[in-house]
Amino acid sequence: MVDTRVTLSGIELENPVIPASGTFGYGQEFAELYDINCLGTFSFKGTTREPRFGNPTPRIAETGGGMLNAVGLQNPGVDQVIAQELPRLRQVFRKPVMANVSGFSVEDYAQTCALLDREEQVGWLEVNISCPNVHGGGMAFGASPAAAAQVTRAVKAVTKKPVYMKLSPNVTDIAAVARACEEAGADGVSLINTLLGMRLDLRRRKPLLANGTGGLSGPAVFPVAVRMVYQVYEAVSIPIIGMGGVSSAEDVIELMLAGASAVEVGAANLTDPFAARDIIEDLPRVMEQYGIDTLSEIIGGAHNG
Image (cartoon, rainbow, N blue to C red; front, side, top):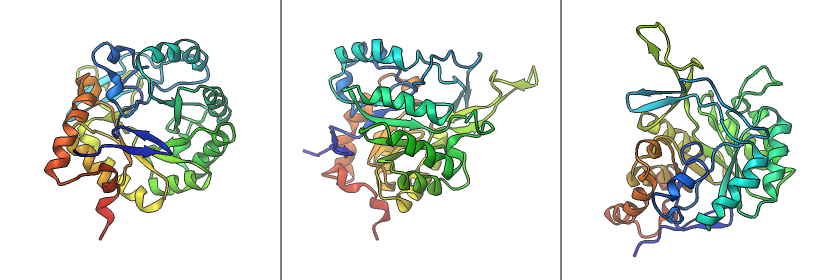
């Protein structure tokens, strides 16, 4: 029997597979299809202080080996999530859930995290710093080590829950941003978020997405994710949640060898709602194929030697 268990900041997961924020809603739709308690956990939809309608449509465009999205953090707001979504989730999911938080100012992040800190169901806070700073000229918080550290400090000041900063790959040096988060007190980092992309409509000669640009996800970004997780593992000593184009149990093993303690599955859930479940079911076979008895022992294994 192989051992698929991993630990994230003192909380044990039965396996390292975590559906990624924005691809799994608040769990309800998937709970109708299979028992979502088979998951390590899942990261719920990016939640903001106030409700958000999101970006104008079209918001999604297909592309070779992936997809572009510019959904724009559509969500009901943290008060509604606490009042309605978490009680509903309790009916179908008995494990700690990962709360994904977005914001447009440092105060936004702090207020939302302070409210979620009181919720027993929430095991970890995953803080998405790929959002534009409305007070800082619109540049993403994750674009500079100083801004990333500022958000990290603000969130850590209002919560006792483990805080994982979700990093943008659209930077020159992701390891520097990860180091800044660690120095500011982050318990871990999640990476990568989507890569910035664009497609054009040849007839209209305009961008396909109403927003112009969108986030590229799917198998096309997987090699970038492996490279960045590998680099960040060399730079920090806090746990890493790896993601970006994961679509198989082999991909999970590869990201863990690069340095991830757990792995999120994103776009694959949108093309196949059973993707995360199937990866979990296939994991023991792939572990046996590569002579892995205990999954946690391979974390960062590509760096040994």
